[in-house]
Image 1 (cartoon, helix red, strand yellow):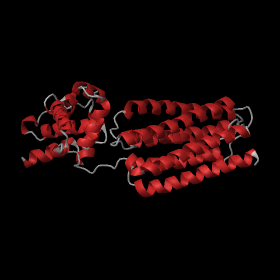
Image 2: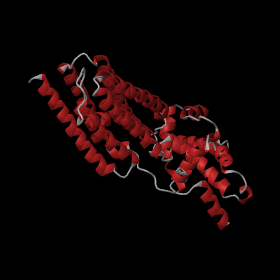
Image 3: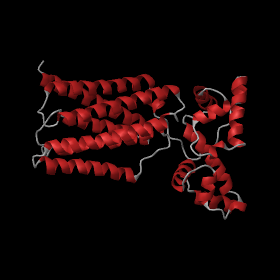
Image 4: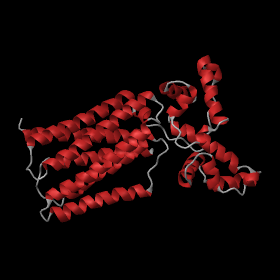
Amino acid sequence: MPLDHLDLALRAAAIALLAMLAVSLWRDLGRQSVGRLAVALALGSAAHAATFNIGGTAVPSLAAAPLIALATADIVVLWLFCRALFDDGFAPRWQHGLIWLAVFGFSLISCLVLGLAGHARIVIVANNLLALGFVGLTLAQTIRSWSADLVEGRRRVRAFVVIAALGYGGVNALLQMVAAGSGPSELANVVNAAMFLAVIGAVALMLLKVGASDVFAPEAPHDAISVPEPVVAAQPAANRKLVDALMRLMADERIYRQENVTIGMLATRLAIPEYRLRRLINGELGYRNFNTFLNNHRIEEAKAALADPTQAEVPVITIAMDAGFQSLGPFNRAFKAATGVTPTEFRRMRLAAA
């Protein structure tokens, strides 16, 4: 089979697989932020499969420029997707839409202006440098947040999805920049298409094996933030002692108030391995994310303070920071996500009912 035919077949297979993934994810997770981001990522990846050209020097056509811009802006979607993947409470905001629009617009204008002026190499390098920047940002963010996931099987799948996506994205961007202007390489395009199809196929197989609902946590309804009580009767004695010790750290010492609390820090305080504490918080207390575990305790403290008539004059930001939040914005978002109302509205309603 000629290389150009093989290249076309591999791209077509990748696009078909991405289309099936998009339909499946929309059907199962279309109402969740992470599900919608996954669908958008699949569609942007399909645009990438249709437009990448290692070593290409041809000026982008008017028809191809929007697809190239869509493929370039897909790196922003990957960044947001990884944020949502490791933070069950994350939801895209309008600022994120502006970032996507800025990257899309930059890529589109560079294609239409620089490309049509004969500067195809500059277009390729600029777009892929932008992509590499977001790859670095996503990788750094993923490393910081990966440990917060308490479900071991899901952590492994998520790690594979992120490493595969970022690995391919970084390699592809470097290849395109290194080969820019050297002339199209049919072999390089075939290898790149085969790598891309392998990544998409592996991710699809893992989702089929594990199940999308196990990887992507369901969004919790409002008022679902109350701290679960351990089911003492169902626990082995050793787990019961550890749960009691953990809850003392949270209730008596209020360790969640400390800055940059990590699961490793708590494991050290309890003198147990980190993996065992993960299993304890997930299996015995029912949490899927360590940050949610901490924030639930923080918000419970804040709710009690906001409902206390003797603290009616205490500023909301003081209550938030006393509970362990570092600034007002994250506190307001977490509080409203948990209760459906802002802290000020919650205080007004509780004090009126007192």
